[in-house]
Length: 433
Image (cartoon, rainbow, N blue to C red; front, side, top):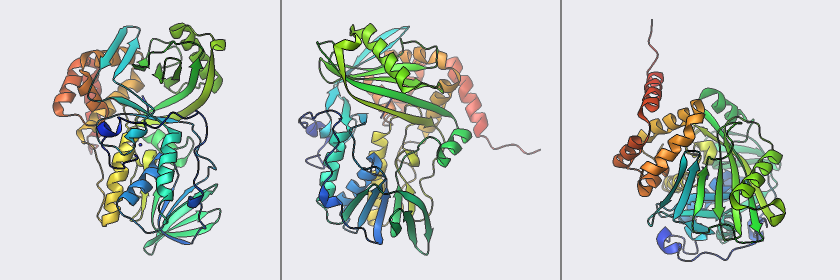
């Protein structure tokens, strides 16, 4: 399950969702405003590493807080490609909601044990395309003369000393009061490997194709969140389908396992799925675009701070929900809170979600890792046995204890009690001799 906008920047999701921008061509890079490509200086108040979702969101919120000090965003990429989507349930006011390309109030779940359809009028599921997000935020940033965005810039090490942070780049050394690192968690990086070795870890590997069929085969009124009825011989796997019209959809192939699956194999499995579920041969549709990624689902305690002036944000700061892989709402919540704290000179909170959810996340994560063959049935019971609004609140960390009690009641008790007992024992301090 994965991770996903504001002409009126403080519009509520309900009012903003009544209008959305016109659909744009898939795969076309976002326009980069020339005004943001300002000459580099040696000193800045804020340096943000990474012009992705977290870096751009944080800069946006700093401006919303009235910050007019110099802000620099650095990224090694050279363009803002339309190469990903963010999805989220509309459970709270969020500034980019009106940019959603599509929303669904009904969603399907399927497995070998049966299928479930849930419908809610309260919390629609929204689909936000990268290009729309990038163009909107970049346009907003370009309106502020204190913001500079430099692309094609390699970043080396950074340090903190004498009350300032220093960042080494391909263009020289930069000095800043604060550094925010939002460059993600690329496989093979030191933090990636440390987390992989030192905590529960389930890789979510996916590849999605945006397809356009020659005839109407998709139901744009509902999406498929998880279809586990596909072959499970290589590891826990499901397919995710987001129809944007009767002829167009994003079809994504997802593995929750260490299985080594090549892009070619992913595409072949998507072709087989589209053929078996929608009756489309490969010559009956065209591929408009592709996205792929690796989302670590882990209970590793990513450090939010590396010093007084250096902060981690986004996936590097632990903003991926361990049990689901959803990231977008977590990024928005933390970046908004962090910007407000920095702008007012107070200490940002260490957490923005109830701590009791940590144990539930660890249990789900451990279940996926240790008993993957039982997961499709557990998910089916969860979708079938928990009313949709209660389930959505749990999935978005807005749940009440009553919501969580409903979830626990729907799940098989014996395996989760065993996992819970082991998890609690592991959390106890080691006993001395």
